[in-house]
Every structure is written in structure tokens, then in C-alpha cells.
Image 1 (tube, helix red, strand yellow):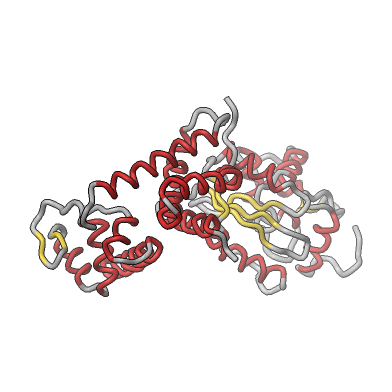
Image 2 (cartoon, one colour; image 1 turned 90 degrees about the vertical axis):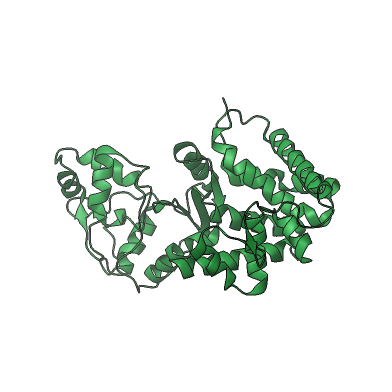
Length: 155
Length: 193
């Protein structure tokens, strides 16, 4: 068994190839999000990877799966919001943890929408972006800001 | 100009940190002696690589001994860099950083923890460190514990000298040890041991 190199080395050596493949598979706009999903999945699984000999093949397999996920998510969504959570909904926000969702309700509109779509309807960033007509990066930024605010609120 | 890949990597790094996947975050930082490698786990600072040490080899060793989830993440080490900068300017006499001692064990770790309690601007002998670690006769082992210190500068092995005051050794080279002791006001400029 070959020892696993630091993950940064994997990133340095293969990020360009992964990006190229993804841009081809899902287009430039969606490639960034698929790229991040690919490397996050890889990083999660990395310590348990038994064999360091074909890291490139391993990464490209993950990238391929993420590209398929992306197309599937698109395909089953003629309208932006695909799956609505099966709970009572008011103002577009599912009622679960009262206090938590009350706090979500006080967020600025963009942040509120992103948090609700992400955790209420379990949509990935790309679909949230499509639903709101913004970039995945903007969706993520709003989500991040929203969550930060919620943590502060509920701490 | 940032490429699409650079931007994607940046986002990935932020999300990895958010998800708690950064087992080891590292960066390189400037110092008066050259670039330092700084590596940190969730427990604290685990490794400081001195300018004369091979950065890539240190990272490979960390990947093997701690976790292969090793990523460059400069923002995670802001506080470490800040305190080191102040130290090199002569404006910090006590590091207030959590430390991860995992890269040393047993007698060596006891020696290093004893070294960590030597105050700024003071020196001790290898013999004293051996005694503090529980075996006064293990002077040579205490010396090699200093030599293997994974967190130099912050764990101040440069404050350990030979009995009688000779400089002894230093992983970063003797000129660096001498300069650090001058910075702390222990040795006068240009004095040699």
C-alpha cells in the first residue's frame, strides 16, 4: 500500500483536469459547484482510501458522478423547486423546530429564501441558484451569511 | 486574474473548513530567518517548520502521522502568524496558542512540556530539562528531544543551553539560535559562546 500524500498535493496535481472534465460535462457555470462537490466528497472519503496509486482515476470517477447528479437534478426539475418537504408550510418555510424557523423568518429575504430552500426543501446550491436567479456562489454566500446569523441568534 | 479553477478551489477550501474537514491546515509565513511552515489541527498548533527544513517532507510526515486531510488554509493560521510577527518584533514575550503535542510522546514530550515553561529571556541547561522530565541522567535523550521539537520557536527549545552556557545545537542552525537569544536579550549582540 502506498501512503496517502497530503490532500493539498492531490488538489494541486489534479484540479485542472477535474475542472476541464466538468466544464465539458456540465458547462462553465455549473462546473464550479460540481468541482467543489467533487473535492468535498473526495476529502470526506480520503482517509479511508486504501490505495493511493490511481488518485486521478478515483477523482475523475467522483467528478463523473457529480456531473450525472447535476443532470439528474436538472432533468427532474421543470420548475426550479423540485421537492417540497412533506410538512405544513407557511410563508414557504416548513414548520419544524419552532424557534429555529422563527429565527429563519427574521432573516433578510435572500438569506431566508436560501436557508429555506437548502434545509427546507433540501436543494443543492445549483438548484437554489436556478430558483432564485442568482449564481451558485451568491446562493452559497447568502446561505453562509444566513447560517452565521442564525448561529448568533440562537446561541 | 483568478482562473475559474482558482475560484472553485477557494470555495472548496471554505466549505471544507465549514464542514470540519480540515484535519490539518497549514500555511507558510515570512520570518526574519526565512519562510516558516505552520501547521495546525483542531487541537492546536502541531508543527512549525524552520526555514532550513524541507516543507514537502514535513507535510508528508504529518499526512502519515496525523491525517492525510492536509490542506493549505492560510486564514486558519492568522492568530499564529500574528503572534509570531509580534514575537519577532520583540513585542511578545508569551505565546498564547493552543498546542497539539501528538508528534512527540513519552520522555520526549515531558522534556518539551518542561521547555514550554521556560520564561522569555531565560535559559536552562539540558540537565535541568532532563531532571524536570523525570530522569536527570538522561541528558543526551533530553538533548535529542530538543532536537526533535516539532513546534520550535513557540516551544522555546532555543532557550536550552549546555551546562556552562555553550549554545549546544539547534534545528534551525546555530546562527538562528544565537539571534533568537539576542532578540530576547539573553546574549549581547555579537557575543559567542
